[in-house]
Length: 332
Image 1 (spheres, rainbow, N blue to C red):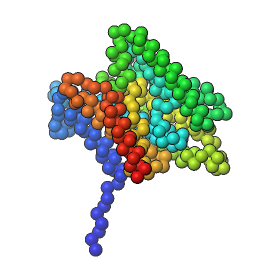
Image 2: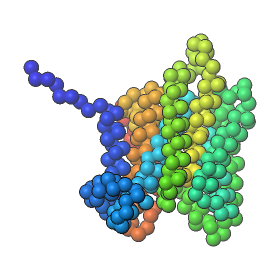
Image 3: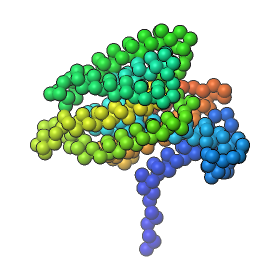
Protein backbone atom coordinates (compact mmCIF):
# COMPACT_ATOMS: atom_id res chain seq x y z
CA UNK A 1 0.00 0.00 0.00
CA UNK A 2 1.47 3.31 -1.06
CA UNK A 3 1.83 5.87 1.71
CA UNK A 4 -0.38 8.94 1.39
CA UNK A 5 1.54 12.03 0.32
CA UNK A 6 2.14 14.51 3.10
CA UNK A 7 -0.18 17.51 2.92
CA UNK A 8 1.15 20.99 3.34
CA UNK A 9 -0.01 22.52 6.62
CA UNK A 10 -2.31 25.53 6.15
CA UNK A 11 -0.02 27.49 8.44
CA UNK A 12 3.06 26.57 6.39
CA UNK A 13 1.23 27.65 3.26
CA UNK A 14 0.25 30.96 4.86
CA UNK A 15 3.81 31.68 5.99
CA UNK A 16 4.97 30.84 2.47
CA UNK A 17 2.38 33.26 1.07
CA UNK A 18 3.78 36.04 3.29
CA UNK A 19 7.35 35.30 2.21
CA UNK A 20 6.38 35.20 -1.46
CA UNK A 21 4.58 38.55 -1.16
CA UNK A 22 7.66 40.15 0.41
CA UNK A 23 10.00 38.74 -2.25
CA UNK A 24 7.73 39.99 -5.05
CA UNK A 25 7.69 43.41 -3.40
CA UNK A 26 11.50 43.44 -3.32
CA UNK A 27 11.70 42.40 -6.96
CA UNK A 28 9.01 44.53 -8.58
CA UNK A 29 8.32 47.45 -6.25
CA UNK A 30 9.20 50.86 -7.62
CA UNK A 31 10.53 51.64 -11.08
CA UNK A 32 13.67 49.44 -11.09
CA UNK A 33 12.93 45.70 -11.41
CA UNK A 34 15.43 43.40 -9.70
CA UNK A 35 16.16 39.75 -10.36
CA UNK A 36 16.04 37.21 -7.56
CA UNK A 37 19.81 36.85 -7.92
CA UNK A 38 20.33 40.57 -7.34
CA UNK A 39 18.05 40.47 -4.31
CA UNK A 40 19.91 37.51 -2.83
CA UNK A 41 23.30 39.15 -3.42
CA UNK A 42 22.14 42.38 -1.79
CA UNK A 43 20.69 40.57 1.23
CA UNK A 44 23.85 38.48 1.57
CA UNK A 45 26.09 41.54 1.40
CA UNK A 46 24.19 43.21 4.24
CA UNK A 47 23.20 46.84 4.80
CA UNK A 48 26.72 48.00 5.61
CA UNK A 49 28.29 46.72 2.41
CA UNK A 50 30.85 49.07 0.87
CA UNK A 51 29.52 48.24 -2.56
CA UNK A 52 27.91 51.05 -4.54
CA UNK A 53 25.75 48.52 -6.33
CA UNK A 54 22.31 49.94 -7.21
CA UNK A 55 20.53 46.75 -6.15
CA UNK A 56 22.05 46.93 -2.65
CA UNK A 57 20.90 50.52 -2.22
CA UNK A 58 17.40 49.82 -3.53
CA UNK A 59 16.92 46.72 -1.35
CA UNK A 60 18.27 48.00 1.95
CA UNK A 61 17.34 51.67 1.85
CA UNK A 62 14.00 51.63 0.03
CA UNK A 63 12.20 48.35 -0.57
CA UNK A 64 13.05 46.21 2.46
CA UNK A 65 12.03 48.80 5.09
CA UNK A 66 8.93 49.60 3.06
CA UNK A 67 7.99 45.95 2.58
CA UNK A 68 8.56 45.08 6.25
CA UNK A 69 6.55 48.14 7.32
CA UNK A 70 3.71 47.00 5.08
CA UNK A 71 3.86 43.50 6.54
CA UNK A 72 3.81 44.83 10.11
CA UNK A 73 1.01 47.35 9.48
CA UNK A 74 -1.11 44.62 7.89
CA UNK A 75 -0.34 42.26 10.76
CA UNK A 76 -1.34 44.85 13.35
CA UNK A 77 -4.65 45.56 11.59
CA UNK A 78 -5.40 41.88 10.96
CA UNK A 79 -4.68 40.85 14.54
CA UNK A 80 -6.72 43.73 15.95
CA UNK A 81 -9.63 42.95 13.64
CA UNK A 82 -9.65 39.27 14.56
CA UNK A 83 -9.60 40.04 18.27
CA UNK A 84 -12.42 42.58 18.01
CA UNK A 85 -14.63 40.29 15.93
CA UNK A 86 -14.42 37.59 18.59
CA UNK A 87 -14.59 39.87 21.64
CA UNK A 88 -17.45 42.06 20.40
CA UNK A 89 -19.24 39.04 18.88
CA UNK A 90 -19.65 40.99 15.65
CA UNK A 91 -18.30 39.57 12.36
CA UNK A 92 -18.21 43.10 10.90
CA UNK A 93 -16.12 44.57 13.72
CA UNK A 94 -12.87 46.03 12.45
CA UNK A 95 -9.92 47.94 13.94
CA UNK A 96 -11.45 51.38 13.36
CA UNK A 97 -14.81 50.66 15.00
CA UNK A 98 -14.03 52.31 18.36
CA UNK A 99 -12.76 55.66 17.11
CA UNK A 100 -9.08 54.68 17.24
CA UNK A 101 -8.40 55.70 13.65
CA UNK A 102 -10.19 59.00 14.28
CA UNK A 103 -7.90 59.81 17.19
CA UNK A 104 -4.75 58.88 15.29
CA UNK A 105 -5.91 60.79 12.21
CA UNK A 106 -6.85 63.93 14.16
CA UNK A 107 -3.49 64.07 15.94
CA UNK A 108 -1.57 63.02 12.83
CA UNK A 109 -3.13 65.66 10.58
CA UNK A 110 -2.50 68.31 13.25
CA UNK A 111 1.10 67.11 13.47
CA UNK A 112 1.62 67.46 9.73
CA UNK A 113 0.04 70.90 9.93
CA UNK A 114 2.62 72.07 12.50
CA UNK A 115 5.56 70.33 10.85
CA UNK A 116 5.95 66.99 12.65
CA UNK A 117 7.36 64.06 10.73
CA UNK A 118 9.02 60.66 11.14
CA UNK A 119 9.04 59.05 14.57
CA UNK A 120 7.53 62.11 16.27
CA UNK A 121 4.48 62.04 14.00
CA UNK A 122 4.16 58.27 14.35
CA UNK A 123 4.44 58.33 18.15
CA UNK A 124 1.98 61.14 18.73
CA UNK A 125 -0.54 59.74 16.26
CA UNK A 126 -0.31 56.43 18.11
CA UNK A 127 -1.00 58.17 21.40
CA UNK A 128 -3.94 59.94 19.78
CA UNK A 129 -5.48 56.61 18.74
CA UNK A 130 -5.09 55.09 22.19
CA UNK A 131 -6.44 58.29 23.74
CA UNK A 132 -9.58 57.97 21.61
CA UNK A 133 -10.25 54.52 23.07
CA UNK A 134 -9.71 55.86 26.58
CA UNK A 135 -12.35 58.51 25.83
CA UNK A 136 -14.74 55.78 24.68
CA UNK A 137 -14.17 53.77 27.86
CA UNK A 138 -14.64 56.86 30.04
CA UNK A 139 -17.80 57.72 28.13
CA UNK A 140 -19.44 54.31 28.73
CA UNK A 141 -18.21 54.06 32.32
CA UNK A 142 -16.72 51.14 34.22
CA UNK A 143 -20.05 49.45 34.87
CA UNK A 144 -21.00 49.43 31.18
CA UNK A 145 -17.57 48.66 29.72
CA UNK A 146 -18.65 45.11 29.02
CA UNK A 147 -21.75 46.16 27.06
CA UNK A 148 -20.88 45.74 23.40
CA UNK A 149 -23.66 47.96 22.08
CA UNK A 150 -22.65 50.87 24.33
CA UNK A 151 -19.02 50.54 23.30
CA UNK A 152 -19.99 50.66 19.63
CA UNK A 153 -22.27 53.67 20.05
CA UNK A 154 -19.61 55.54 22.05
CA UNK A 155 -17.04 54.66 19.39
CA UNK A 156 -19.27 56.10 16.66
CA UNK A 157 -19.81 59.33 18.64
CA UNK A 158 -16.12 59.85 19.46
CA UNK A 159 -15.13 58.87 15.93
CA UNK A 160 -17.51 61.45 14.42
CA UNK A 161 -16.12 64.18 16.67
CA UNK A 162 -12.53 63.32 15.79
CA UNK A 163 -13.39 63.08 12.10
CA UNK A 164 -14.66 66.65 12.28
CA UNK A 165 -11.35 67.74 13.84
CA UNK A 166 -9.47 65.95 11.06
CA UNK A 167 -11.55 67.76 8.43
CA UNK A 168 -10.87 71.07 10.19
CA UNK A 169 -7.12 70.38 10.10
CA UNK A 170 -7.37 69.56 6.40
CA UNK A 171 -9.26 72.78 5.67
CA UNK A 172 -6.61 74.81 7.52
CA UNK A 173 -3.69 73.10 5.79
CA UNK A 174 -3.49 75.31 2.71
CA UNK A 175 -0.53 74.17 0.61
CA UNK A 176 0.01 71.17 2.92
CA UNK A 177 -3.45 69.76 2.19
CA UNK A 178 -2.06 67.42 -0.48
CA UNK A 179 0.45 65.95 1.97
CA UNK A 180 -2.22 65.49 4.63
CA UNK A 181 -4.63 63.90 2.18
CA UNK A 182 -1.96 61.52 0.90
CA UNK A 183 -1.23 60.43 4.49
CA UNK A 184 -4.94 59.97 5.27
CA UNK A 185 -5.45 57.79 2.19
CA UNK A 186 -2.60 55.50 3.24
CA UNK A 187 1.01 55.45 2.15
CA UNK A 188 4.13 53.40 2.84
CA UNK A 189 6.47 55.80 1.06
CA UNK A 190 9.58 57.21 2.79
CA UNK A 191 9.64 54.63 5.60
CA UNK A 192 12.87 54.72 7.64
CA UNK A 193 14.38 51.81 9.56
CA UNK A 194 13.82 53.64 12.87
CA UNK A 195 10.05 53.59 12.31
CA UNK A 196 10.17 49.96 11.23
CA UNK A 197 11.86 49.06 14.53
CA UNK A 198 9.30 50.88 16.67
CA UNK A 199 6.42 49.48 14.63
CA UNK A 200 7.81 45.94 14.93
CA UNK A 201 8.04 46.23 18.71
CA UNK A 202 4.46 47.53 19.04
CA UNK A 203 2.81 45.27 16.44
CA UNK A 204 4.47 42.04 17.57
CA UNK A 205 3.97 42.79 21.28
CA UNK A 206 0.27 43.57 20.77
CA UNK A 207 -0.22 40.48 18.61
CA UNK A 208 1.48 38.31 21.24
CA UNK A 209 -0.67 39.88 23.97
CA UNK A 210 -3.87 39.25 22.01
CA UNK A 211 -2.84 35.64 21.37
CA UNK A 212 -2.25 35.20 25.10
CA UNK A 213 -5.86 36.31 25.69
CA UNK A 214 -7.21 33.90 23.09
CA UNK A 215 -8.76 31.44 25.54
CA UNK A 216 -10.71 34.11 27.51
CA UNK A 217 -11.88 35.53 24.17
CA UNK A 218 -13.31 32.15 23.15
CA UNK A 219 -15.23 32.03 26.43
CA UNK A 220 -16.49 35.61 26.03
CA UNK A 221 -17.65 34.75 22.51
CA UNK A 222 -20.22 32.41 24.08
CA UNK A 223 -21.89 35.36 25.79
CA UNK A 224 -21.37 37.19 29.05
CA UNK A 225 -23.88 35.07 30.96
CA UNK A 226 -22.03 31.86 30.15
CA UNK A 227 -18.66 33.53 30.73
CA UNK A 228 -19.76 34.69 34.19
CA UNK A 229 -20.66 31.12 35.16
CA UNK A 230 -17.02 30.15 34.57
CA UNK A 231 -15.82 32.91 36.89
CA UNK A 232 -14.27 34.94 34.06
CA UNK A 233 -13.93 38.67 34.75
CA UNK A 234 -15.31 39.64 31.34
CA UNK A 235 -15.13 43.43 31.75
CA UNK A 236 -11.43 43.32 32.70
CA UNK A 237 -10.47 40.95 29.90
CA UNK A 238 -12.52 42.87 27.35
CA UNK A 239 -10.82 46.12 28.31
CA UNK A 240 -7.42 44.42 27.95
CA UNK A 241 -8.30 43.19 24.47
CA UNK A 242 -9.61 46.61 23.46
CA UNK A 243 -6.48 48.40 24.68
CA UNK A 244 -4.12 45.99 22.88
CA UNK A 245 -6.17 46.18 19.69
CA UNK A 246 -6.28 49.98 19.94
CA UNK A 247 -2.50 50.23 20.42
CA UNK A 248 -1.85 47.96 17.42
CA UNK A 249 -4.31 49.93 15.26
CA UNK A 250 -2.98 53.31 16.35
CA UNK A 251 0.60 52.25 15.59
CA UNK A 252 -0.49 51.12 12.12
CA UNK A 253 -2.36 54.36 11.41
CA UNK A 254 0.50 56.44 12.80
CA UNK A 255 2.86 54.71 10.39
CA UNK A 256 0.87 54.45 7.19
CA UNK A 257 -2.37 56.40 7.54
CA UNK A 258 -5.85 54.89 7.32
CA UNK A 259 -5.88 51.61 5.38
CA UNK A 260 -9.26 49.93 5.22
CA UNK A 261 -10.63 46.41 4.88
CA UNK A 262 -7.51 44.49 5.96
CA UNK A 263 -8.81 44.14 9.52
CA UNK A 264 -12.06 42.74 8.12
CA UNK A 265 -10.83 40.53 5.28
CA UNK A 266 -7.79 39.00 7.00
CA UNK A 267 -9.61 37.41 9.97
CA UNK A 268 -12.44 36.18 7.74
CA UNK A 269 -9.96 34.49 5.41
CA UNK A 270 -8.30 32.87 8.44
CA UNK A 271 -11.66 31.64 9.75
CA UNK A 272 -12.60 30.31 6.32
CA UNK A 273 -9.35 28.41 5.74
CA UNK A 274 -8.26 27.40 9.25
CA UNK A 275 -11.15 27.72 11.70
CA UNK A 276 -12.85 30.39 13.73
CA UNK A 277 -11.21 30.16 17.18
CA UNK A 278 -9.81 33.37 18.58
CA UNK A 279 -6.12 32.55 18.24
CA UNK A 280 -6.66 31.34 14.67
CA UNK A 281 -8.45 34.54 13.72
CA UNK A 282 -5.77 36.69 15.37
CA UNK A 283 -2.64 35.00 14.03
CA UNK A 284 -4.19 34.03 10.69
CA UNK A 285 -5.70 37.49 10.30
CA UNK A 286 -2.31 39.04 11.04
CA UNK A 287 -0.51 36.95 8.42
CA UNK A 288 -3.18 37.41 5.76
CA UNK A 289 -3.33 41.13 6.51
CA UNK A 290 0.43 41.54 6.23
CA UNK A 291 0.74 39.65 2.95
CA UNK A 292 -2.27 41.39 1.40
CA UNK A 293 -1.00 44.86 2.29
CA UNK A 294 2.44 44.12 0.82
CA UNK A 295 0.80 42.96 -2.42
CA UNK A 296 -1.55 45.97 -2.42
CA UNK A 297 1.43 48.30 -2.01
CA UNK A 298 3.18 46.59 -4.91
CA UNK A 299 0.08 47.07 -7.05
CA UNK A 300 -0.19 50.72 -5.96
CA UNK A 301 3.30 51.33 -7.32
CA UNK A 302 2.74 49.46 -10.59
CA UNK A 303 -0.75 50.58 -11.67
CA UNK A 304 0.69 53.56 -13.50
CA UNK A 305 4.45 54.03 -13.99
CA UNK A 306 5.69 57.23 -12.41
CA UNK A 307 2.56 57.73 -10.30
CA UNK A 308 1.99 56.02 -6.97
CA UNK A 309 -1.64 55.43 -6.03
CA UNK A 310 -2.41 55.65 -2.28
CA UNK A 311 -2.39 52.11 -0.95
CA UNK A 312 -5.56 52.74 1.04
CA UNK A 313 -7.44 53.21 -2.22
CA UNK A 314 -6.12 49.89 -3.53
CA UNK A 315 -7.12 47.98 -0.39
CA UNK A 316 -10.61 49.52 -0.54
CA UNK A 317 -11.10 48.69 -4.23
CA UNK A 318 -9.93 45.10 -3.75
CA UNK A 319 -11.10 44.58 -0.17
CA UNK A 320 -14.80 45.25 -0.67
CA UNK A 321 -15.39 42.54 -3.32
CA UNK A 322 -13.01 40.19 -1.48
CA UNK A 323 -15.04 40.56 1.71
CA UNK A 324 -18.29 39.89 -0.16
CA UNK A 325 -16.73 36.72 -1.65
CA UNK A 326 -15.49 35.53 1.74
CA UNK A 327 -18.87 36.11 3.38
CA UNK A 328 -20.63 34.26 0.54
CA UNK A 329 -18.25 31.31 0.90
CA UNK A 330 -18.80 31.30 4.68
CA UNK A 331 -22.60 31.02 4.19
CA UNK A 332 -22.35 28.19 1.66
